View 1 (cartoon, rainbow, N blue to C red):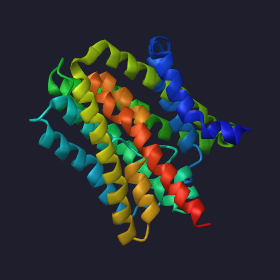
View 2 (spheres, rainbow, N blue to C red):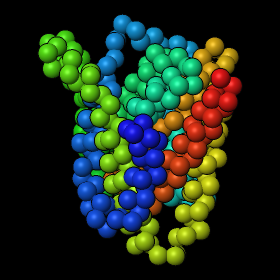
View 3 (cartoon, rainbow, N blue to C red):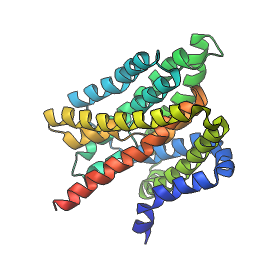
Length: 295
């Protein structure tokens, strides 16, 4: 029964967010706390001794950081909101659920976990600089970078530090936390409901004036999603780590970047990662179907 419920949780969460957007959207203040808790419960399971950084991880990280910046500057002359939307779909770190899907696809879970940690830390330190340059204009560059860094680094890096402290000095607390990491799925579902509601509410407030741009951003998110899975798998195949490459670059923490877009960029840019949720889950469903078909 629980497995069946989990299979339908994403469409349920999105549907509730759409139908009750005016209510759940008001809960957007909970998102940072949910992200923090999800990352803490993800990192609490990590064994640092098993983490191995390979050449593939550096290639993926270069695409994530440098590729997102390059796409922004290419698209910015066309439309700045579209540029922000595409940029954040590439910059987004690997989803905490990626190792789960990677394992189901017979991939290297340890490799994927390593890259997930690297990509989150990269965003924690790079995003404040990039956002200050392209979107956060109320303050001078270094003031705005510091302002964003206080929030983003605490949100993404502190869970790792806290997990190390708990595992080392509070083992009686670490054990039950490790046994109940499954709760992150329900936290993710709640967060998805909230960001869906907030995004829908914002789209409604825009009226029909931005409809063409919203459609273009959704299509662009599809192209970016497919390309990241494909490029990641190509890189991974050359280094004998195909599945981890594809999932590491393609499966994104969209909850985090939707919140980031709404906080630090033009909120309309959140349409891109909002659509990415649907596209990446479609790709994952297709990959899992292929695996089951060949069993």
